[in-house]
Image (cartoon, rainbow, N blue to C red; front, top):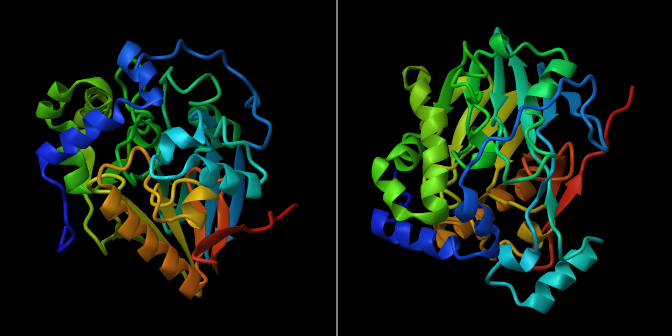
Length: 335
């Protein structure tokens, strides 16, 4: 990964053990990644907002596709460096409760040239995040997308809410014709059998990643920093949240947009206090450096950003504010 630091396996496993002690880890430790029973066929997703939003990035047709909201519990559990009063103030300033924290899952579809690309695949059939998640396949069908028509899947990283939608419960791929693009360091880390011995949440996450990635090994293409994965879509290495976390810069003509993945996890807290680590950051220090670098770039260039976990559809810009930054949602286009 060029000159970017990656933690040793031993220190990563130590961090994983600490992370697994968080209250949110209880469902993982109790049940692992159990599959949710199949949902009945529906015509319209049972969400409080549309399941998809279509817009343009230059000549690229883009669609944000919801996989449904996730309740991650209390904010203090996920920003352990924050003083409780400080994080409550940040949330209050954003007109949000400190608990529970509800985040979205905004997968991105791009039609560029003869390619149809999906960035991240949601939670799949996981049961642990509640019954509002795992909506991607239903929403794709409702919006008229054929899963077999996708030529490429680009993964920001291999966490459950980003890659566990690759495979169906019966072991067949949801996107049978697609090449899967992921950083080699990310693939190697989460599919390493040794990680299964870490126990707790880290082992459960690795087991799920192996179930979704290893059956597709022949279709996986390792993506490097700066590489174009499809016309107008370029990888940008941003390690810290995970060892091989990758953002994707989308460019067409004079327009550009950054799919930020989980570099800045929360649209209020991670911008206002970018130095605060998120609980699932494998390397909190590296994660903070990537976050500051990317937010500074976005604020300087005025580039659009798409946040996977930001309020639907997660499209906006970044401004500097006080000692941090501010996420400014872009008005939705109607009609």
